[in-house]
Length: 71
Image (spheres, rainbow, N blue to C red):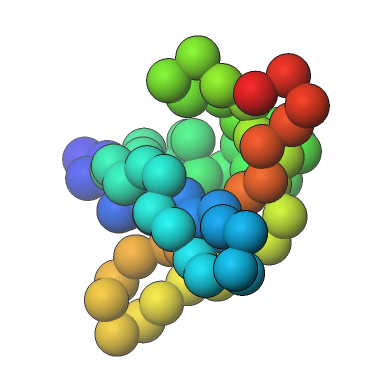
């Protein structure tokens, strides 16, 4: 059974502080798709994936995104 993993999407504000823009559980197939995509969409906006890290202390995948010009 695929229980997924908690994913937090961050973006930087104008002062370079990290701001959470989304947090939800992703399936393992969604995680695997990150190998093939550079952009993700949610809440009607498009974001470019910049980098990610696996936080072992929290058990969450953290992904830095930046809004595209279309957002």
